[in-house]
Length: 272
Image (cartoon, rainbow, N blue to C red):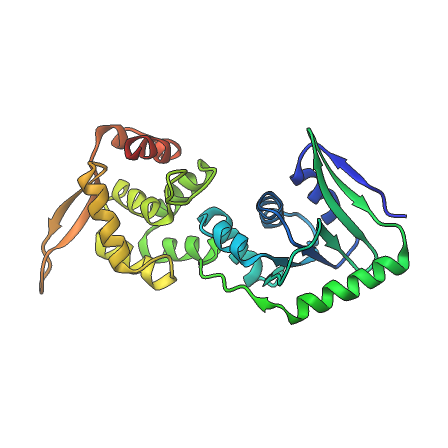
């Protein structure tokens, strides 16, 4: 009989399940907290991670993937074939984690989270076959965010190691990276880090468009907004042919004196 798991957090429960011997697990109808924890744990998992097939509500996935921190880690998992994301057609009574020989229902109550296991082998087999068939027929969810590994590699190659290091530090200081008032979005983060390192607007916006973060127009609009609010300054840099290009600089003393780990929090306070 597979044991129940009782922990104080969703992350601990999922970690216990991932440590099992299953090569493949289906995660059916996850909540936001389940998906956030699953992506976070899987992205840093040490050892042989089971292949994770996720069947989730497409609206939940779209909203969740607006957070660059979650989306970029999920993209890494998808690109490395450690996770698939597909759209669930309908609802399930509980969030389920299903393997060939295991079936868990995830339940939160008070200060604890539990993974309650089924012990009837024929029921587990039927559930696995049913949900695996559902997953096989489901529409793949298109994840448009570039993977975090690609972001880092291209920042190193196209912009510079110092920019990539600052970008990593800023991301590590954030709990969310979305532009809805709860945090800074990936375009704002990129521009602030570029300004900290005196990078040309042309270079950072071309990089962002090339890897799929956002269009040059989006970078330009965001730069204008940040400039109007005093977070960023620009200076013209003459070139041999054509209009001068703009070098980005931090526009406020509070930002210029902030460390990379404080840059996001200072900018967020200024924007709000």
